[in-house]
Length: 240
Image 1 (cartoon, helix red, strand yellow):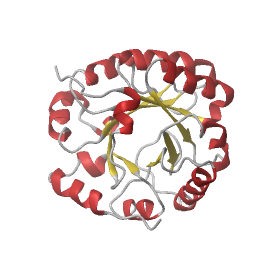
Image 2 (tube, rainbow, N blue to C red):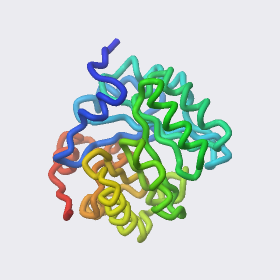
Image 3 (cartoon, helix red, strand yellow):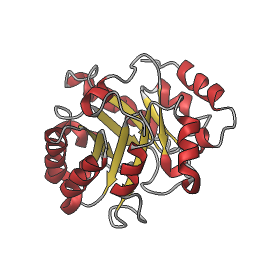
């Protein structure tokens, strides 16, 4: 078992802000050999990203609390759970995944008031909170959440489907989100994340538009020279 030196808000606050973060999506790991994959990435990952889907808010089912509990025993790095679930279950799912070991729970702005309650619950239970936007949702929908979260994640593809190309709107949406963070006086407190369409040619564009972390799938797990890939990632600069 690996003990986690920091957890919850402390672990998220300790993430570097002077370079692009490496957020690894365990959806792209070798699920049959998860422990081996976790050992391979441990030295390179800043935080683990685990998608949760209820087959209603997004196509298909994705991971469960017992999966998070297992991962939490195998890593010292923070765990970010992205809840792609309907509003009526988002609060209970928040509770279950924090109890399983999540350090950061991100809920969708599309969950409305239930999402805001889930964010408050996450903090009450000792975890950090974030908000996510689907590609088709106006960026301004994050505004009610900005006083309460440490992460804002913008999807750059349609929700819940692997292998899509980055939307041509993604970078402009990041720039718009950055402007909203400035207006709210929270630019230094909130990490701006890009999820979906993450490719070698798109990451520099997203970084240039202000992304502070990108959710890596095959770009990381499919690279045999992971150390070089992450060194490349860390060297990318923002234009802001």
